Image (cartoon, helix red, strand yellow):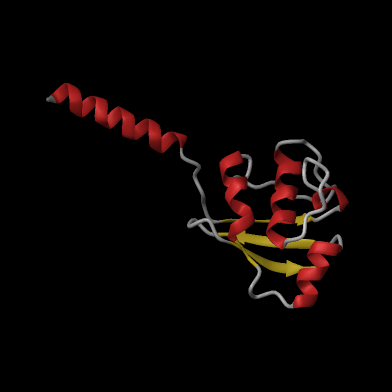
Length: 123
């Protein structure tokens, strides 16, 4: 019985270590031209997709824009994968959404520990 408990505990610990950790954090980044295209060269058409690609360019591909700040969350691919659907653009006006999707604004984001991301500033 003790042996199976140890095995169960070890399995749970490994699963916890392998799961992506999200934490309250914030960062700012320039959403440059490269951030508006997927790794396959397709034009991105949503706020979340552009923000997700920005983090992939920063962490995975080593192609940050000069003004991009680092973050402790999105170096993990699994965290970047959920980012697209977690950026809350409901508080953005249609003009702000267009600016992010079609322009190259400097934005600041706040990420909560439940995995939601909020754009707090657009310049």
